[in-house]
Length: 47
Image (cartoon, rainbow, N blue to C red; front, side):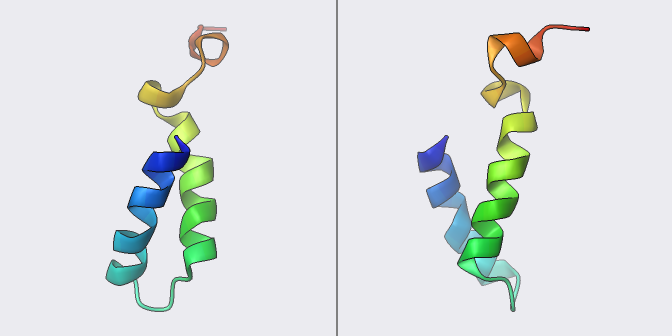
């Protein structure tokens, strides 16, 4: 996941003037774990 975050940071900063790399990285660190692809088996189980 860290590699995906690193790949995504530059395009996000390029497309959103005023966004810092730290902000983009923080957004991706919060967003990616919520995607089915990145969920842990425990988090993916229905409650």
